[in-house]
Length: 443
Ligand SMILES: Cc1cc2nc3c(=O)[nH]c(=O)nc-3n(C[C@H](O)[C@H](O)[C@H](O)COP(=O)(O)O)c2cc1C
Image 1 (cartoon, rainbow, N blue to C red):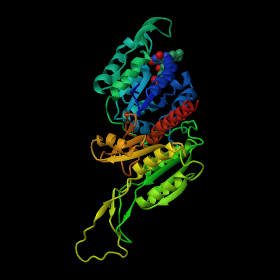
Image 2: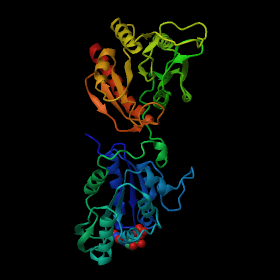
Image 3: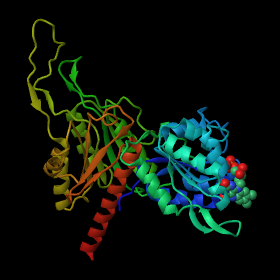
Image 4: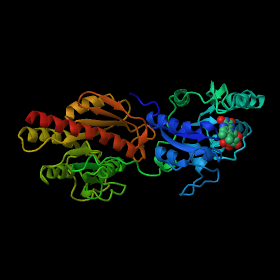
């Protein structure tokens, strides 16, 4: 099933209607569509429903006042306004519609709507006579026509007063559909979690890599031209560091093979520093036979040089005329390790690890499937490093995960940490499948 709000941040504004309790379920439905949701309450809404359910289900602190500052000093409603992909106000009271149509930003919900460039969806709920009053109708018309808001009109049904009329909050599924339509195919506004409202916790993950040994390579290799110069690449090691951190958080014993990283390696990982492709290869081969049975997972996130100078000069090269460097291809470390892993498993000397390669492409990712086959790995994570927000040095990445079974999973633009967790979800599933396979073949 595709999640229609995958990776999106939705600001949910709740106002002082008797239907405010339904907003808890709306939050759950938005989360079920893959959205990250942050809730804002008007003071009146806070009299109908408590913050606890919203905070627990959204995993964000709830904004209850326009005066709220975040712990880091940012202004709460502005952060929502700037980072949300859509705001949805449900239920919206007659009072709130009036305040909004006149730009009176006395509560966090109105203030966020005033400050945002994101689409706004409004689902009013009130007594039938309040709804048909010209004041309300004028306010709704202004929100729709002047501000471009989507109005999910209230429906006919029994009301809190005991009477029946048009005023009941629309079906929650229609409100979710309206949010999906409003967001459509716009790019994600703030894929970097640091730009979003803070989370009240890191979502609890099962320690699903406990007892597993995970080796991650990160950074970029350097190939010596002479004692002071090298051929390198722009990799900073952020993606590899994010994978190592995610694996540690999920209970794995992690070894980070770090090639000239610009970022700090995570604490808790065993660190092996390497400089060149040859050193990286040697380090990985040594790790194959370390411990009881090598490693369970190898993620090759480092950017490994494809070419190196045929000969590195012993002395610093002098600038006396043009210099022509002759380059030779470096060994294909990933393909070699994949071959060795297959051989060792066939010989029964070790269980076969899950191998993950990364492919930095410029432009279409068509070559990636071929690369996966040639390398003989279980997963290949391909990204277009030319795309803004993806690739070297950024905090975000948009990748496709190709699997040996021929499938391809295109992820939206996500933080590198989220990419890491999505990838590890696949790795854990593959480890489980391999374990089940081994058990079946023994029984
Ligand atoms: C029991 C009860 C139920 C209410 N339900 C609604 C309602 O469904 N819609 C509405 O517009 N106002 C309703 N009100 C009135 C609002 O709570 C009131 O206008 C309040 O000032 C709204 O503030 P807000 O728009 O800042 O949230 C209700 C009031 C009470 C006491």
